[in-house]
Length: 137
Image (tube, rainbow, N blue to C red; front, side, top):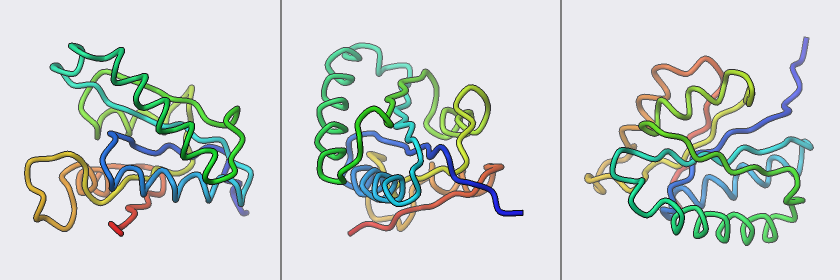
């Protein structure tokens, strides 16, 4: 039995690799008619400028939607407390129930020379749904 792809969850921290992942997820969503949950994890220090961060993310997401030709009503921004991996793993559960997780190969981490970031590696080890790690351009 083939399972339909109805919801894609994509991690987004504003980094270039995350934008590449969002573009990939949005293009797939256009092709298969899926909804997209754009997920931003807020760590302990992230609360200091959360309002400005959310506005910046919303602006970026809106532009990326336009670029992909994706109806913005099919995209929701989810800002959640916790580390990126834990937050993204929770997206596979209700109420989001993502069928697919998408992340960039690197985020805004401290080790830019690595091929994959720690979040990508940890997700690959723990996810219960398919995962796409979009390579850097």
